[in-house]
Length: 569
Image 1: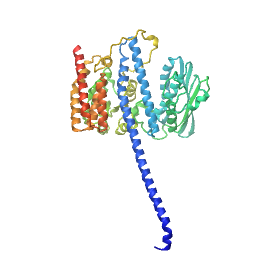
Image 2 (image 1 turned 45 degrees about the vertical axis):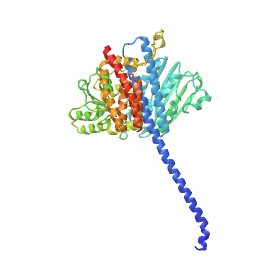
Image 3 (image 1 turned 180 degrees about the vertical axis):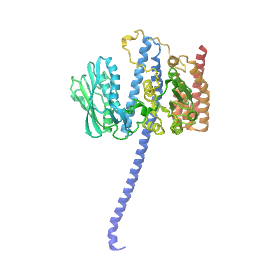
Image 4 (image 1 turned 180 degrees about the horizontal axis):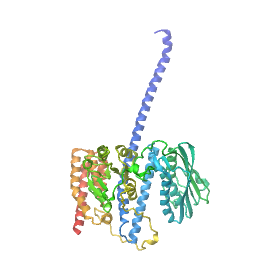
């Protein structure tokens, strides 16, 4: 070693130490990145799971209450039913807000750009909220600049969500006077306009010292325990994030005692200036398409020949949907899996197919792709395919769209949304279901006498839910027989799957039993099946045999109870 090398040796050793430290630091950063990716995936998985798990039981609560309100009820029963429906809808709104906020925070929110008719969107909202305003003697109206182009490219679902929040807040906090939605615009370049939305009310206004709290998540202007108006404090925070996501601006002006004006502006492209992308299916609101009816929906259909296929592996779910449609101008066929649906579509045409996404043998996604392949030729009718799912995540909607589904109905099933599906996709069929709006009557219309109650028993079935189902379909015996005939087979499938250690089948069968027994109010059995489904999803097979014994015992109690009900009739 030369003298020069000896002189450089300390620097070389120091440099090596620095390199070693950098390598360790790099390894740590890589590990943190991996953990961060895993955390993001876990959060996405949690969003998908919680959306499905919470929305599924709400399907029974909201759907059956809607049907119940279309039956003969005395004033007290109608009052209580409206309270149930109002509470369930409020819960659904809360769930939607929490999921949206979580998706935005996780950078999972994506815009769905498509053509929409702005004036029609505004008209729909004003029709809805003018009825709400009537209950408070408020005038709710819109002022739209006639120079606006009308048809734009943008995410109409999210624009409507923002307006729903602003209009809802304005009506909630205004006791007298009016609420107005103003829409104006100005051209920014050849193919784009800046559209400004303003919601102005004559309410109490916002104190100056409270204005800095408006767009803070979970913050309320009145946080006291005696505040008049409820809410999570997420609405405006979500609005702000959605507007920012669409490259817009949002703000407000308010003076205490003189009302408030909330506004936002969006840069929207004009429709027709470039090829429009078809919007992905959304649970609500209906998609607005500015093209001519014949261009997007094909030839006219005769109401007498409207053929509908219902594809669902659960007999009870098929029965309920078929019952809802039984008095419409449709010919209905039901099958229990995607393979049967594909086989039918080889030999005959359907106008519309309701396709459950999660089924054995062949799921709804694979079946849809196969049906689209079958009907690719110009000589075949192209059926409208509507997804049925309790998973409202963006990933599921994207998957539905990618395989060729036209639209998506999210559980809990909304009757107005179901009617929108028929109006949008089969406009000439004349299909009408019960879509009467259910609003809460004034307290004075309810009887003042207290309801009679009976002591809580150990019945495996909630009699009230069973009574609601009977009011829905009339004679409840056929649906009970359908359920009982399938129950033993489902239990045997579950037992075999547990014995084989097949977690996927465990999850699927438990999910099916859970959904069907919920129709009768078998809450204990449904909860046990939910646990089995979760364990199957997590591949946790250790204690499933013990859980299955409890499921079987609960199922036997439910079956015995329902057989007694059959004998009574």
